[in-house]
Amino acid sequence: MLMGCVVNYLVYSWMQQGQECPSHMQNIVWSSLMYLSYFVLFVQFFFEAYVGNAKSSVARGSKKSE
Image 1 (spheres, one colour):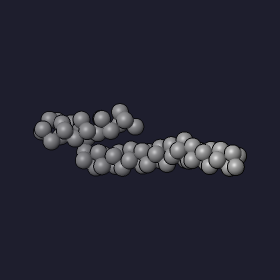
Image 2: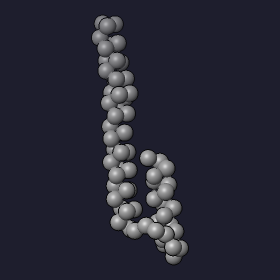
Image 3: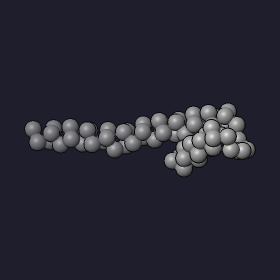
């Protein structure tokens, strides 16, 4: 995902500099949207798997001590 974003940035910058690049702006837009959706899904997974469990385990720990 990170390398795809780097490649998108490089291709876009080459196109802006006028260098010949066998790509189109539409490819950059669609692939950027794809990587954005991957990022959103990863963040959702991360919070559900790690942050959400930390909150629930802290809440369970305080209930046990009572």
